[in-house]
Image (cartoon, rainbow, N blue to C red; front, side):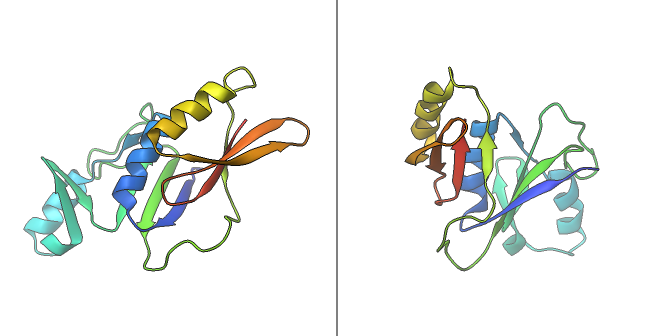
Length: 146
């Protein structure tokens, strides 16, 4: 079984770039899937964005574990993924689901500093059976570093 964690967002490509740096993942290159669809007229330029030679869906971006195999026909990773999809409404309440990044007590402060340099912001500290820092990504999605 594989899984994808999906986040609604305003800018899927910016958020995917942020999380790729956080997790050390690779942003998927969907050019192998999109290019033939464009050439056949099944999708149009309004459906995609271009970054040099790379093509991506305008409203969706995905991350993959760089060590996982990649399907050459689609550019999609064969392992677990994170998917970011554009939605029209802004985030208004606390997440019902969030990621916990486990780095260990000796690395937590350094990791929080690294993440804030990438664009995260600290929301608070927690202490129940251990210690963690709650942060928000650039669109306000909460996550913890333990």
